[in-house]
Image (tube, rainbow, N blue to C red; front, top):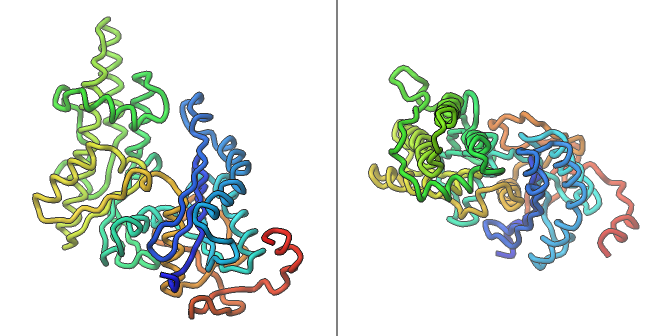
Length: 377
């Protein structure tokens, strides 16, 4: 284990300041500072507030992660950071911090993809990913089916949402029902006491002529909202638990149906589910049921690793180091629309150092030793 790469990962794509420390595929620390309570009063994430919260939380969260892991920053073999996709300002805070730490410590820097990180985090719980892996990523900003023959260099989009992401739909329906923000956990909780067959809400893009692997939840969201409005207009009570259960069932039915179909069509016998909505209990149960029925092995990380966190970034960073992928340049920037086909942002080779026997990119030969001593004495 001591020979495996020790990597610190920084995640700031939205409202969670996540810092993780990973050695190989072993999680040593996962520290998170969340600003979700601040955003709750606005009914959604406010980008400027998120960015400010990242600034305030960054250094204390890094220090906490290193302490929890029982390692020194000088022991690290690399620093990984989410370069995109995500909120531009929030990403910029994380990228700037990672560059500063990597520069001061004379460590290689890896700008990695948020979505690829959500796939790679499963290695921390279930061991190395099979190749290829089919991944269903479901969150507030993404609903994607991805085929990953190599998580560090080859991630292929199979399908994605054409409008609202699943998590976004959960938040919007929760708002219509006056359930607060974020909507996913409360709808999941209420749905357990409701009847998923009580209301026949539509399943988007499931017709024979529709895109096989794409998703659409805008029509479902509108249908649920109009149903609720009609009940209220008629002076009738809204059966909140039945609405929650029926809406949730419509979402997870489509997600799991298309994911299993993609596995079968591509001849892949593993399905990995990640992203914040992967914490949903009904999604996990229905996916397990449908996968078992056709002989597909389901891999879902524990809920704490499904939401945005630094551990997933560190996991992908450690894999980059282990496979000798090139580090990023110091002009690495945040890219709010970084495509999933770019698992990481490699640099142009200026100079070479050896890290774990692999060539790593460095071009910072003028770091003042006094500055490094002041940071980490």
